[in-house]
Length: 191
Image (tube, helix red, strand yellow):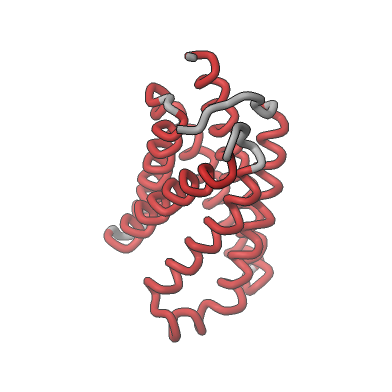
């Protein structure tokens, strides 16, 4: 369980979460924009998605870990965030590949958000917050994903994919930043 001694302000959490995760997402989406075919051919589709998940965990944990306070915060946070993002990716990818358009992306966003919320709520010991965290992550995730997809379709090519990555990262990162802020604050209040 991660405990708090000095929670970041909500504004700081939104800013660092949004901008930091936008940079992370831009890096990951760059590998899609410039290397997707190569990755599919050499790693398979499952291998490519696994590689993208690992990149989001490795890079995102460093950025988002700065929002968590307490002793041993970064190693513990990496484990927590790694589990949360991995389950998010599993929920998203399963729904995306198991269902058909147009519901696949919406259910992927929902499943991934709920699984991520569950891990964060358990990790911070605020299980009563699962519904709030799920809603917050689902809204942020969906706005970033679908507006980013729309921009990608409009702009097209590598530039569209990179733009999608920035918008997705900005929104989801802000959502994760808010969840981390509230998880630490509510944990402190209930202690």
